[in-house]
Length: 199
Image (cartoon, rainbow, N blue to C red):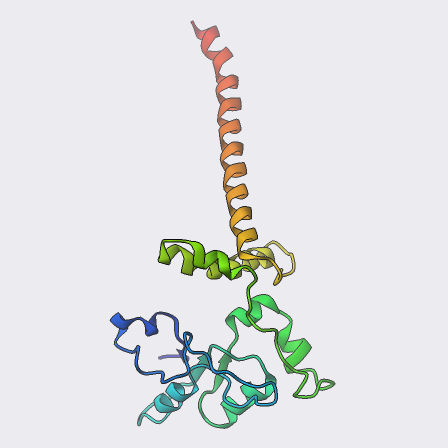
């Protein structure tokens, strides 16, 4: 009754999950340092996925997400039996055309079939926020910002800075609030003459 199980970091690295020591050295906090010439086993959670795949009785497909950038790395993860499916969340937000342009493009060699890294400009701004929960959430806003752009029919803007996204959000909230206030004023002005006639 289960289509597939996804293996990813997310909340699993938090100590309350009980899984925080399950991933070994390759995790979101300690991402593997991979040379451009070494594509194999680039995913953050490959070792954990391999252990899950070896559990007797596991029959549903496993999807592995987190860290994939190269066609060769994805192919290796599937060929090695670590997973059956590859998840491309953040990569797909920044490059929605990645399946056609890189993965299935036979004109590109494996050395060229690489997605761009998830490096966000202006991360220093996140570190300046004294409230850690707010500061650490700002990089996620980078991807939320780009998902909104895609939803509005625009292209992703991978060069947008975190301070720029914060400023855009503030301006959007202010203009949205101003619009609502003006609509209420206009509505009140339209109702006022009717109220005076009734008197």
